[in-house]
Length: 342
Ligand code: OGA
Ligand code: NI
Image (cartoon, rainbow, N blue to C red; front, top):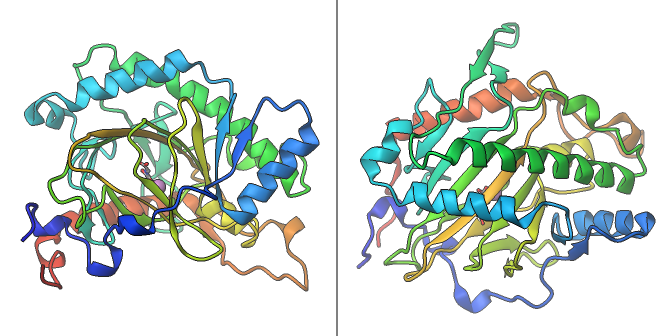
């Protein structure tokens, strides 16, 4: 018998299996302060090709900024549910607090708080291809903790800078000019997420986040010292734990880069294990393009021998469709949860 609601329970093939975890031969570690730019670019290219994931150290983000955000996240998630729900996300207010996220129809063992990096963020308002109306995404800042807004905004600025630098390195690693991606990232729809994974009485049946790929361009993740993130190794499909390194960031290629590079850099599946005693926090920055961006393989990376493998899509419409489907899942929660027995 499980000690958790059935909505959280993963089907047997997707349940965490601690015996498979291997930390040796984990994702690459890259020192961003390396003065040899060619070597750095090579390392980034290699990591993107082999793993789609890497960790960075000496990245220039002041540890204090991160520490303050971690403190604020902890204070916020320890407030009462009623208090947190004052800034709850809904169909009209797409940013804020949320505790019923599903990944592939199974409920995740976590709570989140989302905020947009640009204020306001200009996003698509309609799924209709010919309807260019714009939605203004506003952040919902809680009253408590009072410093939350400022701390979140200051931290986001650091992510924007680091994101730019990483995109330059990635462009160079593909033999492109450093600024190749700038045009897509001018008016971004990037978001930040504070993730809170409470201790779970049935960690062998549930996941903090089920296996998924990130839909945007690139993700920069801060994880605390508890650990739990696992990455699907490309070479053999094994789940590999990502070892927490103090003050490091975990970078992963997301779906848009896969399309831009015509599959040369693949977006990789990952998931999060929870545990029965410790709570865990993580803070991803999801770097997203502008709503106007038509996502398609870059001309420089395609030719007759290597024709485009992906059909173009408008980022704004895609992002809106995802947001809406999140809420549709909520409405149908009761029918979707159970097609297997525990
Ligand atoms: C995510 C994610 C990983 C983590 O939020 O998309 O993959 O370690 N998080 O929390
Ligand atoms: Ni993710």
